[in-house]
Length: 237
Image (cartoon, rainbow, N blue to C red; front, side, top):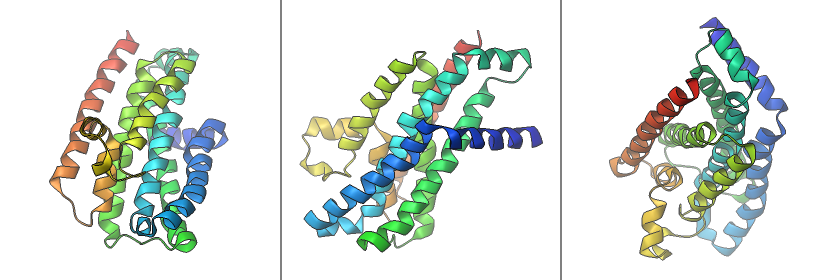
């Protein structure tokens, strides 16, 4: 356990120095919040009721899908993998360490948004903070599980960024944070339900846990975990 915690601490320090993680987990989400938060609340004053949730969904999705995969590609498609195998370190350790570190960064960024939104844009604080933060914790985990599939399946750094953007854009555009889902064509509305962002936004916007929002996230997480297990076995060969 001590070695594992040391690994998490080391990965945390490496991530702090990473420009990619700094940009995707902090700079871009906070800039988006600063610009779009003002636009949303000016054009649609009612957006203040869900501003924290919508900005958090964008930040978590950006940090997970665009920030995590390059780190995994760097581990599993370089000499780092050979070092792991030579020293008898399970390959899952790389995935676990980077995911935990990214999880911590995304949670910190979400807390910043939670505190800043009411102060800057007079956004409404969720009525039940306990439910909100548990929902946030679930959403971050599911988003990272999807990002892990991209990082493990794609071996080229450039292609990783391309696939990340391909998943990121529909996740945001069809999640309901930009405009109500009911305004979308039926086909787009159905497609949006395939992404964690849609269900994460609904879960965090609700003040109670509802199975119709929670179960899809759990299903996506289970399927992603199975897929990651399969990919890790292929990498180990």
